[in-house]
Length: 256
Image 1 (spheres, rainbow, N blue to C red):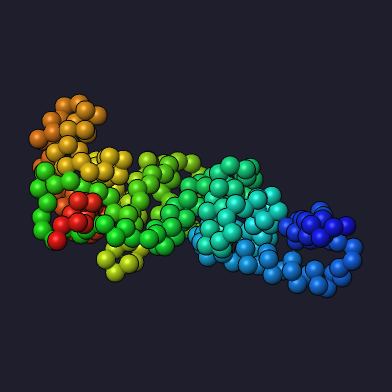
Image 2: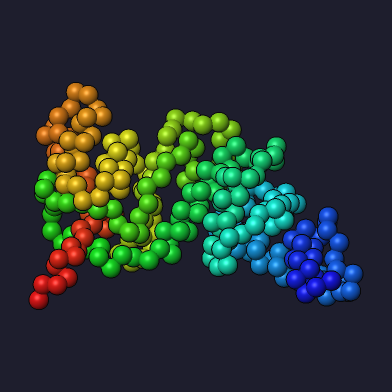
């Protein structure tokens, strides 16, 4: 066998030792070291990224889930920190849920991944926190270390003692963000605040008044002026938390 063939056989056995034999010229004692090293590293990264999800499984079924991912999924990223993203992609695109999996499995995993992702995002150097109250003409942007998400299940409440078996009174909307102390936080949003932040996220650089004009087209019976009163107060609160920010314009970078 060529070196490439030996290497491929070595990797194939490590990924799926139950079904693929090890290279014949390598003793099992040595292979066992590699099998445990690789799997334990991957399992450790997944467990730390999805602690709530892991807590819902017994040890046997959790190991089976991670081993199936380890054997079946071809990771595209060489970075250990992105193993959690690869696991999430596997659940979304390839994995077929089993009876032992909770119905909210993917949504919970996604929520836990978003919390992890927000915690390591690089803050955009052009983000500017507001140091005074905003007005209805202020152009708004979602912080580069914030993310809006929506789920069918109350993922923020799920734990061993609370596992809903069907979607309840959703949708459940949240903004996950890093505060000024760089701690990851989340806020549950009602439908209107969710719509406000979604508008800021999807159409950055709009003013409060433009956002309200946009929303007024989606909610019959309200004018932009009527919406702007409550919207301004809500967005002011988000600005104080650093969820909504201003941006340094490119032209200002060249002004002495």
